[in-house]
View 1: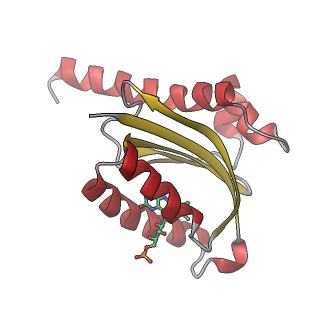
View 2: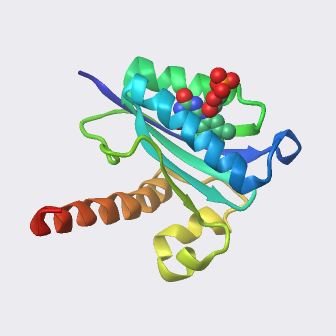
Length: 152
Ligand SMILES: Cc1cc2nc3c(=O)[nH]c(=O)nc-3n(C[C@H](O)[C@H](O)[C@H](O)COP(=O)(O)O)c2cc1C
């Protein structure tokens, strides 16, 4: 099975949000995790002030279909592709959509690899995206190893 990874940054269109942001996020995550489960798509979504940065992984066709859905979502605009490539493994194999809100800057002040996502008015590079998402992928993997050791 060929795996594909796509990552993009997009600006949020606040005037297209129907609910207060936390409710909009909860409702959207519920919906997209349900769709992603059916499509076999996994990934991570980071909220960064006026932007979101998302990574999507799965079978090529399914990932490209998902990108197409995202591009047609009225709540997002100015979508910039960061990563588009076939890959050998998933960074977020067990996450139908991992989510973190980095807007308060606390996580970025503790972890340098997250800073480029916040600081950048310009493009986020492929390397910066990999470093930032790699931070969370590692955190999840370490959590799983601990759980395995504790047999929980
Ligand atoms: C921030 C954000 C992330 C999204 N991520 C996904 C995703 O991971 N998978 C997906 O299928 N759609 C994703 N979408 C697209 C919407 O969820 C999708 O267009 C919407 O659910 C349309 O379906 P509906 O009108 O049937 O609810 C995303 C949309 C936004 C705003």
